[in-house]
Length: 241
Image: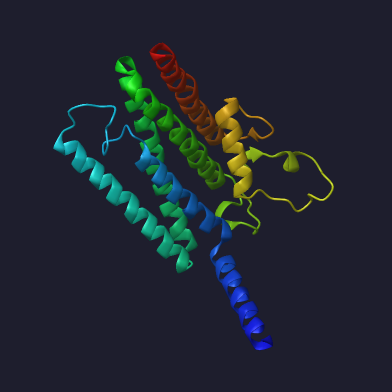
């Protein structure tokens, strides 16, 4: 029994070391991008399902199939690069993949706006579901952008001479117990959440132009989805009742 427990403890230690050597944050980012991919596939007004549209052509279905394949290739590439500890290459693929998902989010927003004028009460429930998926994807996609542009980023605990992109409260003043503090992905996820729902910075201020532009873009998408599309769908439901 003692030998069995010792073997389990050694296996656990090896697994922890394996994950730590390849980057815990990087593994988390790959997992988040996987969920973003699932969210974008689940949006009903897409080139694949198109429940809110009519008369889609075969060309659009072909484009949708290609986009699905591209997402799969990126995800498999990221998993492989993480397993082989190719951090720099993985970082470049993460940037490209997140740019692809950002373009998809913008496309979904435009597509949904296009059908609002002819929205029927039967499609309103699907539209509200789409809004929830887009809102969640918006938070995750931009939290990854914030993590990418703000050091230490992929380097994690190693020192980075680059200037900060965001002024977290722990960086702005000396707080007891936070002398060696540096942000992790959860901090950028919180930043993405608050920006999405407050439409502006809350406790963390953007310091450079890239951070400001990204926050403006995220807030604009959030305003359109949460106030414009959601309120229109609710109005349609109210009118149907």
